[in-house]
Amino acid sequence: MWTMFFSSLFLAASALSTAFAAPASTSNQLSKRCTNSATDRSCWGDYDLSTNYYETVPDTGVTREYWFDIQNGTASPDGYERLVLTVNGSFPGPTIIAGWGDTVVVHVTNSMENNGTSIHSHGIRQNYTNQMDGVASITQSWDGILGGIIINGPATANYDVDLGNLLLNDWSHQTADQLNAIAGTSGPHTFDNCLINSTNTYNDSGSRFETTFASGTSYRLRLVNGAADTHFKFSIDNHTMTVISTNFVPIVPYNTTMLSIGMGERYDVIVTADQAVSNYWMRAIPQETCSDNDNVDNILGIVRYDSSSTADPSSTGYDYEDSCDDEDISTLVPYLSYQVGTSASVTDDFIGTLTGGAGAIKWEMGSTSFVSQWDYPTVLQVAEGNDTWSAEQSAIELPTADQWVYFIIETTFAQAHPIHLHGHDFWVLAQGTGTYDADTVTLTTTDSPRRDVAMLPGTGYLVLAYITDNPGAWLMHCHIAWHTSEGFALQLLERESEMVALMDVATVNSTCANWDTYATEDDIVQDDAGV
Ligand SMILES: *[C@@H]1O[C@H](CO)[C@@H](O)[C@H](O)[C@H]1NC(C)=O
Ligand SMILES: *[C@@H]1O[C@H](CO)[C@@H](O)[C@H](O)[C@H]1NC(C)=O
Ligand SMILES: *[C@@H]1O[C@H](CO)[C@@H](O)[C@H](O)[C@H]1NC(C)=O
Ligand SMILES: *[C@@H]1O[C@H](CO)[C@@H](O)[C@H](O)[C@H]1NC(C)=O
Ligand SMILES: *[C@@H]1O[C@H](CO)[C@@H](O)[C@H](O)[C@H]1NC(C)=O
Ligand SMILES: *[C@@H]1O[C@H](CO)[C@@H](O)[C@H](O)[C@H]1NC(C)=O
Ligand SMILES: *[C@@H]1O[C@H](CO)[C@@H](O)[C@H](O)[C@H]1NC(C)=O
Ligand SMILES: *[C@@H]1O[C@H](CO)[C@@H](O)[C@H](O)[C@H]1NC(C)=O
Ligand SMILES: *[C@@H]1O[C@H](CO)[C@@H](O)[C@H](O)[C@H]1NC(C)=O
Ligand SMILES: *[C@@H]1O[C@H](CO)[C@@H](O)[C@H](O)[C@H]1NC(C)=O
Ligand SMILES: [Cu+2]
Image (cartoon, rainbow, N blue to C red; front, side, top):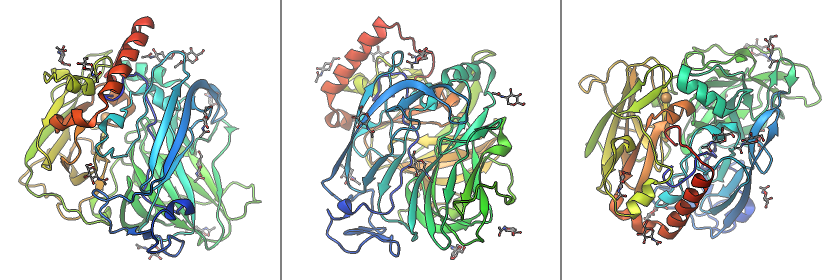
């Protein structure tokens, strides 16, 4: 949003991860300390899992360039044709693949007739590059303009084959603009379906996602929840998953049979083909506690050991408790030790509240429902030296460098919210139900999970910390599409005095001028929070 001046949105999904099998060309750029291979995924040229990636990045000298053309078209991922927005004609768009330390340049052409757009790289920290954050607006993104990101690097457990991203999302036979209008007046709509890597069946139409396992081989899957409003539990019948990263942060591996994935969250898992030769269901189960879906028992893919088989699996799913809670804090231990500062310099407490009357649903984070200004983004305001912030800009000023900031986010409503922060990993210190009470809640300050999205439990609290090590205007918001649009967001104005020097002001100016011209000519009206 601030860096973008346009209404529609984008590229939300992304799966990033810091690890995977190296394209040889990239690792060749580095002097070899070891070779990343199926039997040793821990290293990456001269670097490895112990490298503090907040401070040090390999300089490969490699630039990977992509050209994306955003188009308006149709697609039938579950057999029902509807209008979608695509990147280069496909949904999802092309996957960006790079090695750790490469530079990525993306050129975007907007060929949609009736919407402006922006591109956000979800989960990319944008170290000192706030202007490139391209915060998304809401609706169009969920109509298909998204794609994966894979960053090859070291991993905390070995595997043979990288299967790439596995995108999980919800799907409606209506467009996101139509759904957003419903959500804004009468609350969230019930989705028709969900897609596993952009395909599924519905009323005997469409087709299922399928993949083939060779006995004895281990596979890496990069799970991405790109849904607008669906929390998943993911599993493969009869198989145990080894979880190796959370939102691109490599973790000490742990095993599970059922993985809980909130909106905007990503997990990388390794699955070994160690079961009898047969067919097994892969399940992405919408959690009915917080996600309404008409096809809830049918969000299924198939893992086949024998690729010539066409039979449906007869396997039985693992038991699970329907809930929208995150994986437990104690399981998500980052491999790279980086402990939170235990005395916060700044502590802020926000209540997520549903407001607005019938027919006009709004959310507040803190005391105002967030609204950005497409024609006056934060970066332009900062470039002009205008330090007057209106209430609805929900700007929290954090002027001091390298300060520990603690946020307590609470809600009295039963619904869970995935809280996402741009420009940073945060440390998750506590997550629970009830009212946050500093005297009774114990903060996890040793080996706290680091990630960029975490669930705020329904009628509960979430305590996060981060360090002001990245100047810029960063959005913190609920990742439920409708809630962002309805104002469940705020912006952190971090080290504002350093921002202008890091910006390309001429580009900000000319982009804003172009937007103003387009918006005036086409009578573009901003009818929501703008992000
Ligand atoms: C982030 O940018 C700062 C300022 O340029 C630099 O000191 C730091 O090394 C960078 N971090 C990484 C991981 O590149
Ligand atoms: C996408 O389309 C553009 C313009 O047609 C083309 O230059 C580019 O190579 C395509 N990119 C991919 C990844 O297909
Ligand atoms: C996509 O095309 C449809 C049908 O022509 C049109 O109504 C709609 O406005 C277009 N959407 C965008 C975002 O340009
Ligand atoms: C984006 O396109 C949709 C579909 O044509 C339209 O309903 C909506 O008003 C457009 N939004 C903006 C802000 O241009
Ligand atoms: C999912 O689809 C993408 C292409 O969009 C592909 O690269 C990836 O390998 C697929 N994932 C799996 C697990 O097959
Ligand atoms: C799918 O089938 C159900 C039950 O037969 C029916 O009510 C519904 O209209 C069908 N949906 C579509 C999109 O055809
Ligand atoms: C899957 O696990 C169940 C329960 O342990 C077992 O009964 C079944 O035989 C297994 N399926 C196969 C194909 O091995
Ligand atoms: C996970 O389970 C596999 C067997 O399925 C075992 O070899 C491995 O040691 C386990 N890993 C952890 C971290 O418990
Ligand atoms: C400064 O910014 C505020 C908030 O965006 C805006 O209302 C005001 O008009 C701006 N002042 C000037 C002189 O542009
Ligand atoms: C950008 O525009 C502002 C006024 O909006 C002006 O003060 C500034 O000089 C411009 N900067 C550049 C680099 O064009
Ligand atoms: Cu929310």
